Length: 330
Image (cartoon, rainbow, N blue to C red; front, side, top):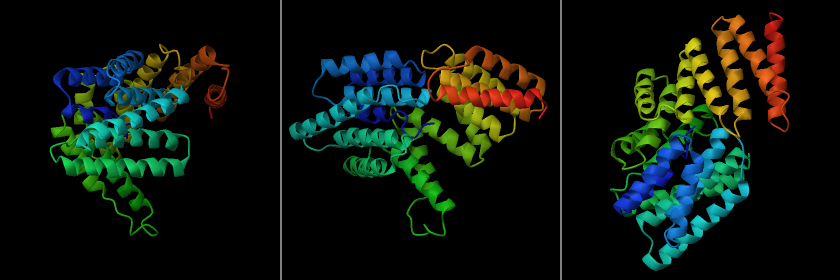
């Protein structure tokens, strides 16, 4: 879920207390999926201070994480315009103040968000350019100020991803630099020492530890996140993945039911209502409860389908096929 989660916080260690507090509130709203409030606060900061790039950066990340949550591209024009504004303000900031760890961190984060946007659109060359540029800037930010550990969030996630790729394609990428263990170590430093990216690092590590089958570590982090953000859909997705990987399908189904109920309250949530109901059905089937699976699938089709527009229509077709298969006993 969380390759780019909460990069905005990395700039906050160089801010005064009032802006650090505002950044904290925006980040909490994003984690809790209160995107309208987070975007309004970021836009307000951007209007009040037209020089500092923090406001546009927070706006950029709120837009990007909203799209990630709904698995849709809700306003690409606003996202790309805000990205351009963030870079323009960063460049202007550097002209007036010189290149600093703060300015490099902001620019690196913006590049990372831009790369993520293009990755989700399967435009890999555009993503690679922005992603590598972001990594270079964040490494430079660390060199200029070794006490600024917040860039480790992106750098650690990137290092882990490179190591994962090398593991899968070792025969052709044996030369490719990247270490999963070093990536995890950097994320742990970020989780322990970063001022405001600690939650983002926790979320990344929760998913990584599930993937690495270090379930005790994963569950400890997930429980802590749930205590802090019980209504966060990002946290619920991590819970569901954990239970699925542990083959605790009844519990996974319960989490998917909570996710579906949450998405049902959202204007843009219909697609993910269908996605999470389908996952709930599949988990119930895996748990051996075909009767409950049929009932959930039937109700989901009845309430949500037919749906207009892609990708909802495709998901309705898949849900309908799944319901018929279950109902026929196959």
